[in-house]
Image (cartoon, rainbow, N blue to C red; front, side, top):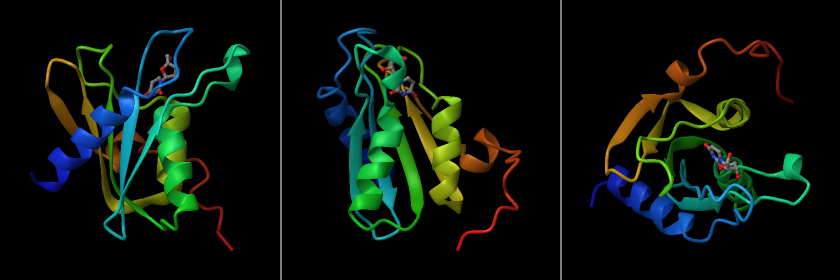
Length: 134
Ligand code: THU
């Protein structure tokens, strides 16, 4: 299994743990960190719908808590989307906070197709790119 296949497999396994009793749309994400480790996340919904957190952001917060400094790749998978599933706008913003310059997002769907997209293409115009980190 190459790196991408492993990442897709972890996102797929994670999706079975999604907590999505309202939308019934289950999502799993897996982040490949600069340290070579993989961290997963799932969407976690809430009865106060707006508090729902996507799988991608949960995978990233998991990775940061485990010491990740930068993202090499993120795979996203849903058994409830036939077509490859791209991250929502909020997740794209959060991915760019940690993405390495050549980071990619691998969007996967239940039909087995996967599309690899550079983060630069998914989020080309970051209005806050001049805000410096301390
Ligand atoms: N969702 C994700 O977790 N990631 C995406 O990329 C798209 C949407 C979740 C949020 C919500 O729980 C459900 O999918 C339906 O929007």
